[in-house]
Image (cartoon, rainbow, N blue to C red; front, side, top):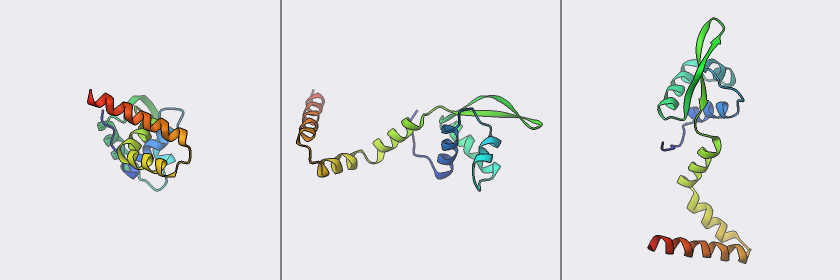
Length: 122
């Protein structure tokens, strides 16, 4: 599965799921989300299912009805790590090098770069 950057609404739903100790229904998520309609929550859940960020973990009861329970299939750490790698890894590395005062760390980075270049050359 390729990890894509989430929209604001998708991020909101994922944050609620990541911070929950239990699997949640659409209504449970709705109760934790400020100013978001249940319809929007349901649409976002369908998109997240299609993207394979979440899965249906079971069936629960909401008042008088039966509801699906959802849980994340991608951890928050995996998502953040992937987003950083996609968007800003070069910027983070170059900024670190520009601002570093530690010669030994810069030497270690230089050795890592040399080793990686040799590996890629074959």
